[in-house]
Image (cartoon, rainbow, N blue to C red):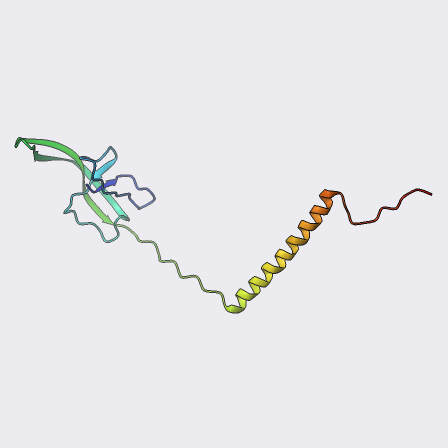
Amino acid sequence: MHIINLTPCEPGVYCDPYKSNITAPPEGWAYIPDDFPLPSTFPRLGSLEAEEITYTNQSEAGAEYEFTMMTVTSMTEGTLPEPQPEPEMPTTEERIKALENNKADQTTVDELSEALELLLSGDTGEEVASDEA
């Protein structure tokens, strides 16, 4: 069964799973009939309308019965997002410069790490003059 949430999951976009294990849509959802024409922008819709419709079915024993189900009655085309331009690939020169900058940044990080280790160890690398005389 193809169903649709009557509340958009994001502005203008509706969630529409196929469920094989249900016989009627849950509260807040509507059945989309198999022969219902879907807009080309589906599931991006401008509007969605549904109403309770009464259906007649036949049981395995041959008895007819009626049931009502929230059913989609109309959908209008939505707006598709503008396609995003493909990002420009950096030139070889730009890639080399980025690699050089990363290497320089790594050198700075290594120097700072060494200085921090010296500070934490208490070793400043300087000789301390003694006051013995």
